[in-house]
Length: 148
Image (cartoon, rainbow, N blue to C red):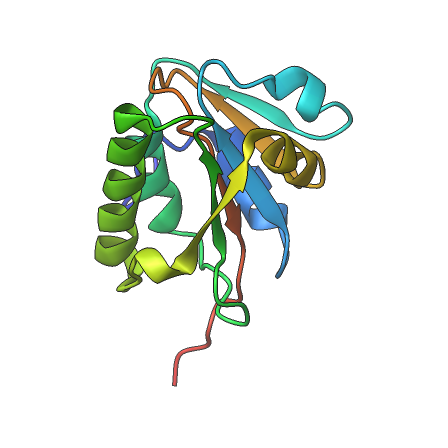
């Protein structure tokens, strides 16, 4: 165990987050996302039993989002009006605000197949137990600013 590191972050996930460089992306995928096929050839980590909101909060406690682009966060757009998908998006916006003072303007949305295409370019895919449909999110890593 380590101090001040959320225990939801496994050693494997911490390693992946550390390995990633500026501009690399990571997918936090819901339980229905084709994580193994989209993530073929790259790290695919399992976080079964955990929802994306808790995992997103934990990741953002260590992971700087890219400030060189306007929208370092990408959500999968539901194919039809989907209240659950909107609730997930609103929840993510609140987590982003708490984690780094970012608002919903830093989030962009992609339709499902465009999201899959972008996810294929990610550094890693994290498969979660999230059951909300269209709850998938891509984060683009920024730089850690030095102290002083």
